[in-house]
Length: 128
Image 1 (tube, rainbow, N blue to C red):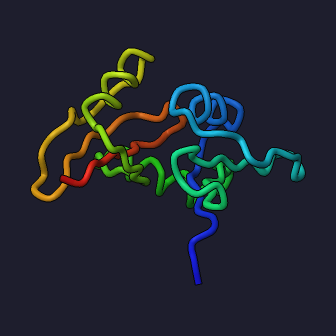
Image 2: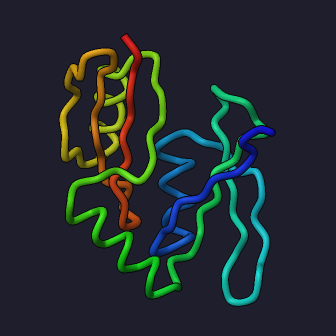
């Protein structure tokens, strides 16, 4: 068994696709219509291309409540690994990304948290 696909709820799929590709640097893998929404997946060119992140439309009231509660509590819904957290944070800040937690040492890992512009907090981490 292996992880092939995970998803993140987004309030605007087009905006999310732009953010996750143009700002974060992921690449689009799939994008096709599914009813009134789209099935969109991205992958990291630094990782395994068969591990995808789906940009799910946040159309379910329960999902919206969960997403809002996680954001309000300051809890990231995903974490992505970087080999150089400080450089990655600088690059993202230069691209206009807002951080709610600056890069910080957390024992065996360094972490930072940013807003993905689509209703989520996302963590980036670097093992030390």
